[in-house]
Image (tube, rainbow, N blue to C red; front, side, top):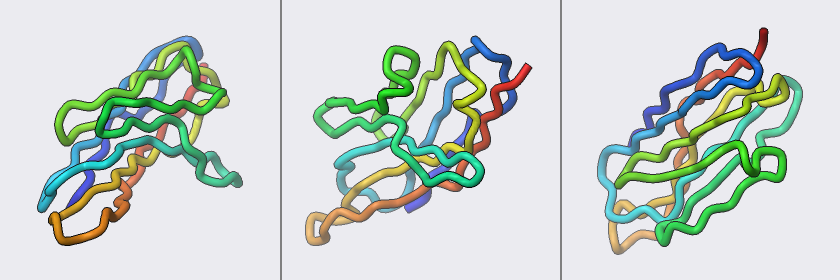
Length: 118
């Protein structure tokens, strides 16, 4: 299983950006998909997650500004009204089964840098 994340970059405060993460390989079912972020010197924290049923969960700091969505094996994070404190490396996270015989396993993408600065 591979996760390919894309969409990071440099954006001005107040701007928007969309991250994508596509899961590929031997996938039987996906339980949940999400995004985490890690700023320099800080721990990796959950930003947003979406379950197979479509339920979503957001960090308080991004509620009303970020929207997570999913299309089959790809998860998106639409980020609006970006702030300098959103600067971090963003990692996608997918919990899935490669077979009905196996328990779900969590996979991580390679990380994509978002820098919010004027």
